[in-house]
Image (cartoon, rainbow, N blue to C red):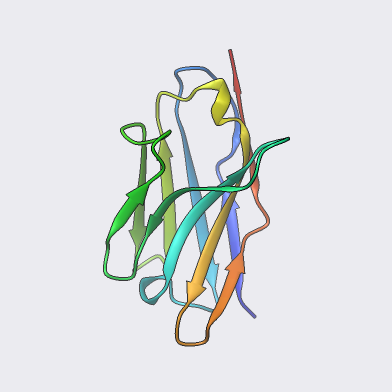
Length: 117
């Protein structure tokens, strides 16, 4: 059974930092496309950062320079370091994985990030 489990969310003041982690079981993140999405009330779910199996990284314009995505193949985890957080970063953050060979995608349960002004 495939599971993606996020951790690291919480409440932080504007300008602060949080580090989210996504631990996978049942799949190897090193061979999959990985991404962090977020969903805020009244807004569409958006991709925040992504990393391909070859290591190509992309960020949403709104987080470029503040967020950093990384993957630890040995631990089978993907992390999102979030610095200089803003109130508009408040959302539920989801870990996402796409396995191209199986043509299947997987989602974590989400972790709440709240940034106070």
